[in-house]
Amino acid sequence: QFQLSGLVFSIIRRTPLYGKIKASAFAKMRVSTESTGVDWDAEVAALQDVCVDASLAAVKQEAGESFVTPAYYRRAFHAYDDGNLCWEHACHQPLVSRAVGARNLPGLPAEDGDANFRGAFESELL
Image (cartoon, rainbow, N blue to C red):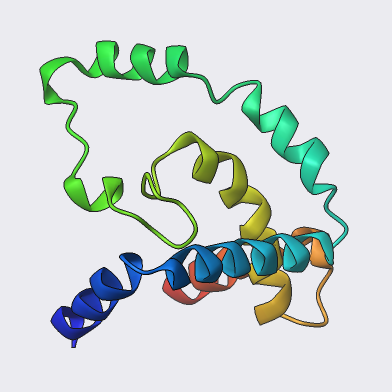
């Protein structure tokens, strides 16, 4: 099944439809996140202040030769052409996680969505 989905994705990615799908996915993530009370633009701007190449360079330098990013993380992922370890995704992920938690755990405070979502897994595992 994974090979088939990879094939379908590689075909769609080469069509004009891909840009529309990607834009739609991003818009849905943003709207869903903002519905939990998040000021998307302000939160992303604050995160962009710390998500800079100098930060990554410092991590790589500290890790030394052992620092290797697996190819999987550099492949296109959802709305991110540079994969799910790109700075854009790093700035969006904490915000979107709140929305995912709020959607999957209705009845709990939306602003605590990510903590509630991840906490549910932790409580079951511990």
